[in-house]
Amino acid sequence: MAKHFQTLRHDVWLPYKFAVGPTFHRFYEGLKEEKILANQCPKCGRILVPARTFCPTCYVDMGDWREVAQEGEVVSWSLAHDEFFGMPVDPPFIGALIRLDGTDCNFLHLIGGLDLSNQDTVRGKIRQGARVKAVWSDEKTGHLLDIKYFQPV
Amino acid sequence: MGRAVGIIGTGQTRHGSRFDVTYPDLVREAVQAVFEDAGITPDDIDGVVSGTMPSMMEGVALTHFYFADAMRSVGKPILKTETCGSTGVSLALTGYYWVASGMADMVLVVGSEKMHEGDSQATMTTVAEPFYQRFFISGAPGVFSMQSQMWMARYGIPEDKLRDAAAKVSVDHHRDALDNPYAHIKKAVTMDEVKNAKVITYPCRLWDICPNSDGACAVIFACEQKARKICQKPAWIKGIGYRGDEYWFGDSDKVVWQGAIEAAKEAYGMAGITNPRKELDVAEVYNPFTFQELLYYENFGFCDFAQACDYTLKGTFARGGELPCDPSGGTLCTNPIGATGLIRVAEAAMQVTGKAGDHQIEGAGLALAHAMGGVDQFNGIMILGSQL
Image 1 (spheres, rainbow over the protein chains, first blue to last red):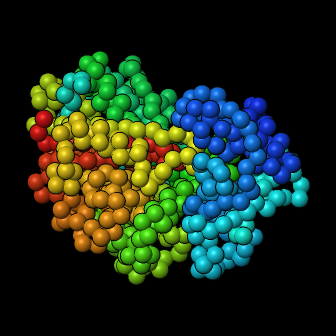
Image 2: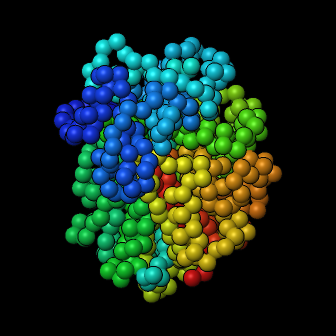
Image 3: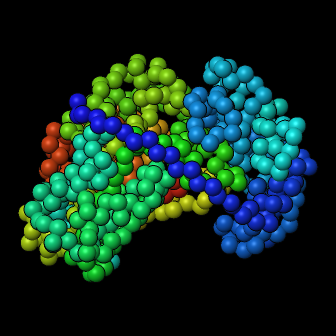
């Protein structure tokens, strides 16, 4: 076993101010009103959520804004049992890709509102194709977590 | 196509927990080893390429400054490349481009990581912005568990079969690592241990997931003329491929994964490979998670889609099989992130030059090295051969 000398504890704490820009601003304003906003690419026609400034595929400015369904299908999910830095909720929690009805990409969010302590029980309820619906936080601050989580319907 | 390029030396540190040395001293171990292997001196080097995981991991932002003396890069041109998990292959490609272009004859490439000093999963969350994606990236396991579940659901792979195949990958590689003097995790595991281990993020259990490792790797790339003059048996670069995906994780398919498919196709085209399972002798596939290695077999055309479990359970990709994958134990047993992809390249070079020691695949003449980075975003491949 190699010798371990002392270690030096040193934390780097750096403040950042990220400009959210007009697109995320409008998306967040929608969340405050319990609306999930998407917009459509005028070229490929895809409806993307969250709304984007430009279509990542066509590289043109996105067009029409619209409110999309608050329900959709689970595309994939992972049940985290361990704590990960910077996560918004304590474990256990489910991170998931959800295809909201009428949209053309997968929306990344949490699945909750069910007992997550037993993975076998969870797997009985959450699977690819399972229907889920947004549950809103009581207090809304214009943040992604204004949607508390998506709950199985 | 540029000039022909060969690898004339590789060097690795002992990987694992390396609190015994400072970070530059760790880098120096790999650099000293590569110069010893190549039989040249730092004076012979025209340029240096270095990289790590994103510097949030290192706690020191300007690593090519921090490592300048350890890499003997003082007074030389230097490039930095970092693409998270694929950093090492990105580094190798950068070195290759530099020599192939004719702008340098010999380039030293160094990848390193000291994962025990920082917080790798916290760093993983910072690869995404804090407006949207950062909140939901529960470290690497969260992302890759989602990918493996999409794969299972797509093809309706029975859970028992998948668990058996993933467990076989884990058992095989943990046994392989026992024959690799540089490997970090050296512990034989049984099928039962793997299948019943603690779940980290379902379906990934403890032995399905790579460790945090400290380690460094260095490789020297040389033009054909210098390589032939200096080295009795260079490993020749036969093909390269690299693809990046879009930023938005939910926008594209990661099961039939175009980035991985196209990167492989590009490298195969350059190397003249039409049937990779038959033509390649060994592959060092990036496998931080057992499930991901299986998924790569399909995307790299080692087998058809939905077939990886069957081939794996038959032993096709184990040592002694038709196409042995990760005989070093792979990323599953050793993952100093910034070095990991370069270790794949070094291992592939060692295989085609007969220098892989106890984990040598007998007579290997053509080898594939691969690494993936970001939130399933980057795939890089380098194919090495014993003949130019």
